[in-house]
Length: 427
Image 1 (spheres, one colour):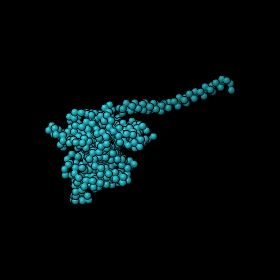
Image 2: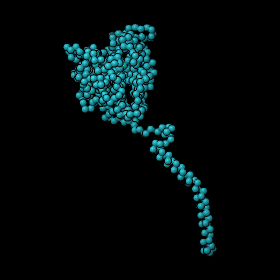
Image 3: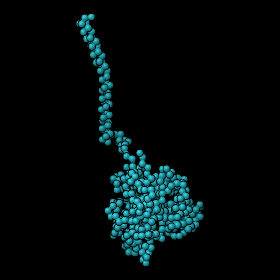
């Protein structure tokens, strides 16, 4: 074959290949165009998602941001051998109080002593210092992270309500406006931190078991009647709560005897208070063992909050009460308002329990704080005292309840320390 023929054959072959390539490109064009349209649409959707203006978000809401796990460092925890309940009150007007009375809108009139006219604020500037270790500094953001998707509930009387209000005040300052809510659903009060899906709650149950004083606002004081073996009505509101903090004392102590029922609601008998208290706590213990999942729920019991009704106990020869006191008691002290027999009963019941309940023994450290009660700067039967009543502190001073900020904040610092202690880091 001559060179000219070879060139002609190559030309024919090359032309054929060009024709085939053009045909292939033409057939692929719709696919390429569709791909470009898909990529462009995807880019638009992605940009819309990034900007937050997507219709998907409008219908289904924005997805939550990826959250970092809470991590409790070794230095955040107290030493296992540390006794947080033995120590002394140290003057600290730099880091205390942990919040301002004016900054917390959730305080009731019963606790806002400065607003009600108390002339001094020294009671706010004392820090509890354990003897052998350091009380962890309260960290509201860390506690909110730990309580994410959980419920913390305080159960008890008005003293326990003050601890609830203290906890709300400690937490609410770090939560932006619009991201928190507060509602009253008697016998409960509920504070919610929306971004954390966490709730801090209070449940009115002055005897823990059921009684004729269980209405949140309209409760009898003088004619108290306790149903020693009845708790299921209350218990329905406690089921599934992640952290339960119980307290019950002062309502039992009105008289040495108390009217109560056991078995039949029609059979009312007069019980010695300590006997009735033991039976009531046994009913509570049985409920715990039947309803609490110790792997998912934590239970705390607060010891009695002390009273300072008689000044002769810390100031021999005097005949007053806690009114006009500005400093803690120095040295060893235990007032007659704290019943040791009740303390023994609590110890016995908790020892016999088949599940773990952490006992927070705040009585001794609170005994020193004769200066921190509401005295004449609080409420009586829902109303602030009149000028005439304030002028008669011997008869009208409240030496049971506490001003806020104040002693209940320390109780919550201790509660926080134990929550940190039991928290398991997720690696």
